[in-house]
Image (cartoon, rainbow, N blue to C red; front, side, top):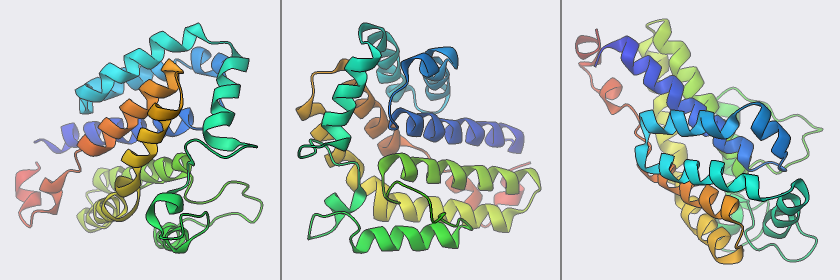
Amino acid sequence: MHINELILNEKVRGDCYRLLSACFYQPDKSLFMQENLLRNLVEALKRVCPPASVFAEKMEGSIVRYTDEDLLIDYAKLFVGPNELIAPPYGSVYLDRERRVMGDSTLKTMELYREAGLVISDDFKELPDHVAIELEFMYYLVFKEVEALEKSDMDTAHKFIKMQQEFLNSFLGLWINPFCEKIKEGTDNKFYHSLAECVSVFIMNSTIPYEIMNEKAQGVLN
């Protein structure tokens, strides 16, 4: 693969993480529509993960059925409360034996953020292993990889690719499926049901560019 084509693919893959992350924050239908967030997600996924693009198209088609209030109510039921959460959006609930927030895996996640050069602000209000934050972290890692590739800094590109692999294998990739199953079982909201399908398919099929990890990468990528 030509290096320029690889860089373009990686930019698009990173955008998929960023756009999916936005879908797990408190919903703002007008913002989704004005910024063409869902259309951009569809087009990005068509390039890097066509099976997931099918569900992004369903998200785009279904969101128009709901008012802002409908979306907010279902979002709160699933992810916020005040009652027991249907689908807790925190990795530690699925990864730690205690099944609670701010568990050991949360602390390990924070360590990875620091290793990647990120510092969590003291006034940051969400827990660091919230699904939106972890998806955004993957976007950041891909962004840093692309930044290195554009400078032909293969060592740094290797570093951030390895961090992506580690984060998916040890954290996000382990809990995304049970989390998404809870969403699908817990709501009849078509938008959130399709979002769960979309993000799980994307992460399970997300292709990390392992050719860069090959010792002969600089000869392969020209």
